[in-house]
Length: 249
Image 1: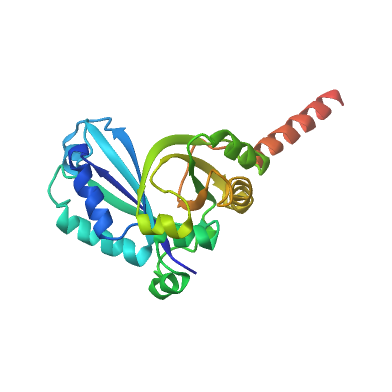
Image 2: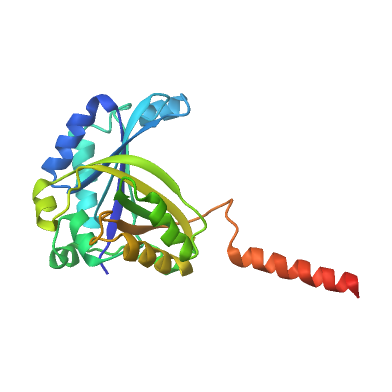
């Protein structure tokens, strides 16, 4: 199994060019940039560098081995150990829709990814997660078609954010698509049981051979509130029917 990670960095917009150059120097093929704003101004948030001010949010996908190296280099070179300079973290990916897409975003061959892949024995097996977050990265303007495909595969809905892609020119030419363009990111919360069908449906409709060039992967969710499963609703409906039948009797 190839271990990959979703790296997120929250930084000061004034340092965006410096961070972009850092990612280029560290040979990070895929970068997605969007804007954010802090919602509090407490001492703790200020200490983390995510207080009440404009921020740039950077997303990328890397092998776990490379993600660890990038975080270590970022902490040192971009001085994240200094309060206010930003924060960065990684989340392990559960699965990736297609080896070609995985090679594309990581910028490495399958052999290299397998060679660098490391497994933390203390990490919970991915199949133990009941819920997962599906992330679909697609060219701007194809959200409706992607969500239609996802709903056909039982997705309940999704959240969309806009981002600007920047990437390694060599990787773009090799794969025949442009990463440096406007992108939409769709976030869909799903059960682990339904995740594969939803990801396959999106890729089948919006994959590499289409104009949307979708990249789809999933992230583990430890705990969740506010999501009711379709099975729960069906159980409720069945219970209501039983109650009505008993009342009629």
